[in-house]
Length: 73
Image (cartoon, rainbow, N blue to C red; front, top):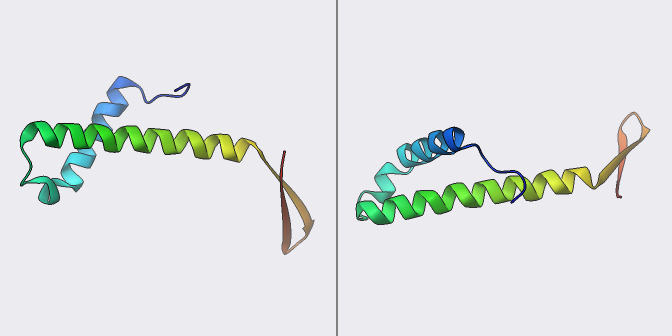
């Protein structure tokens, strides 16, 4: 992946996701929780890259004040 989350930021994101999903993951063994959180962060990072690339390929053209035309480049 060209754009990756810095190690420190990734760890912070893992901690936040662990906290958010704590109740849902409490029945899982600790190792499975670590794997799940890592997968969630990786999926999030991947989705961000896809959306950033998609955004770069869009060209917004303002036709009138209330009308916007979107074209792919």
